[in-house]
Length: 96
Image (cartoon, rainbow, N blue to C red; front, top):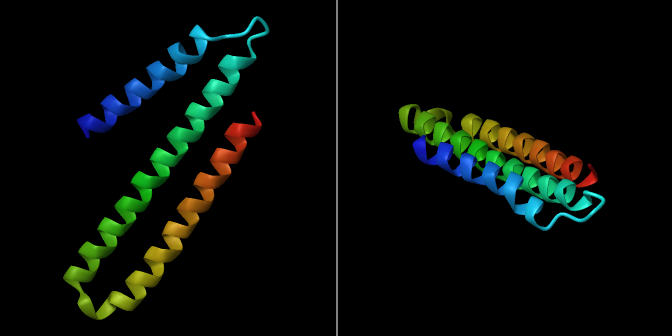
């Protein structure tokens, strides 16, 4: 968990300091940079979420193998919903 916090802090620092160094006079570059960093954070969060769903499904199947079909179906459905929300967040970030 400490690694995730360090990655989030480094990403936030890049989001603030990176685009500011190359900012245009009208300030549009910082907005585009922050949108790109937000899209990157959305992908990172979606990846972590899908990984946790997969982890939970595999642990559940290991405990109760006879329910593997139902668990697998629910896992795929949850992963698809997470991916859809991630893609929506990326599009909103780029439209901002």
